[in-house]
Image (tube, rainbow, N blue to C red; front, side):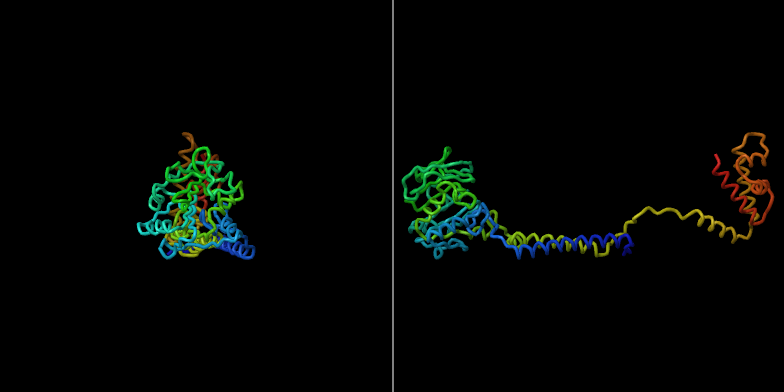
Length: 371
């Protein structure tokens, strides 16, 4: 177990303050969102509850404003929850697939007189499971569509515009009600009980107010109660969160996520580390004075200063010999190398007391430093 240094405590304190700041900002953001509510409801594309540009809450509100009743299907397709007197609307069934039993339920619903409206991108497999000889959906962009039929569904509709994409190929089993330059955008089959709208942009919030889109949106209901299918989104369809966290409102999810990050940072900063702590700075040797004091203490224990003095003087003379020209005179050479008179006398062999020991050591030190 390591001991956290003063510097480590400062770092930990800074991290705790940072974590506290993150939590505090999230709390403020949460409180602000609670007291400053907006009307925007985020969620998966095609949902009748979503008020962003990709939702169809405006379509649902438009139908209700026209006096039509709307409902929500939040259970799998079963005989008891598909009433043939109503219109079932499935919007943006990106990856929706059905079991054999569910396919039979939808087919029976249409055969019994129910109206099925499928809007937006859809898998061919789904269409083939629930319809006979359906057209194929293609994800190509078509800017504007024009009505090509006098079908009651197109009464009052001349042009359709949407920011989305999608078209159907022309099929002998389905009548083209509206089309663009590259293909059909609204087709009908099964004696008008099945309507396929290729581009969800005709009815979503982002462009339902364009051209004659609102008229088509109302006509699709056929004067019946409209049931918006939300069950496949609630079951984890594309764009629908499949976790509990993903089902929270956006600001709540952000609050929980950032709070979790702050908690992890706090635990890491507060908990003890298992490895030795990292030194803040490089360790340096002790000051020279401490070294000299320790050497002096060791020499004092020997109680033989004369022996130490003799060795230091011999070493000093060796240095003088190495640094002086041949035929030098010791005293003169020592003076030229910076030694004082007392140091010269000790190096020459004079003195055995403590003062001489200090002078010999000082002389050797000077000679070591002199080049």
